[in-house]
Amino acid sequence: MPALPYPQYGIENLYLFPVFTTHETFARAIGTNAPEWNPSRSPKYWFDPKAKDSVRSRVAYRQALVTSEKGAPLADPQGKPLLDVLVLPKEEAATVNIPPNRTNTPGADAPFVPVPLRELEANEELFFAFGGVVAVRNTSFEAPAESGFTASDRALLKAIAAKMGL
Figure 1: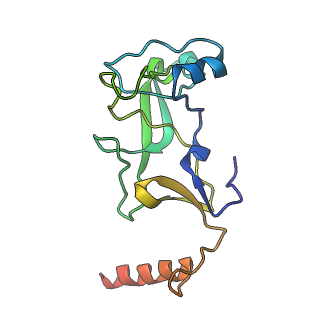
Figure 2 (figure 1 turned 135 degrees about the horizontal axis):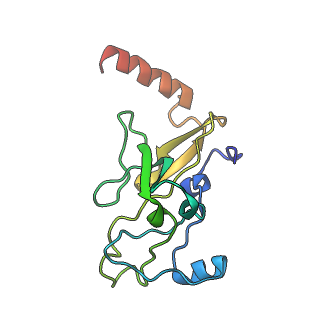
């Protein structure tokens, strides 16, 4: 899917697989019941239908958000959301692990398994939006000037400052 024709949009537009937040949404979309909640595994709201057919015991996805032990997205050295390879056993990749209730279920508050992302287009970049939420910026759109500088002016100033060690 190419970049959307908007200045910015949610990261869910990069997801390789649909996300199911409840057993009911899973059953409606897939036509079968979701597996029972397993509190010994992390919550997982997506599945790869082709993973179970893999000849390998593990499935690797080229990119997913890297999160802290508490589930918050981490930043790379440039301050952008950090991406890395996600490797899962094929049995785990092929199924969901949806808690029946997100608040009163032991283990449901653990960080969830991140959803694999499609490759970013040349004109897309991840950034932290308000509240630390990860979003996608379409760099084809020039951001409105906030203080008399455009987004490209700010990028140039940051590059100059980095060269000067500031």
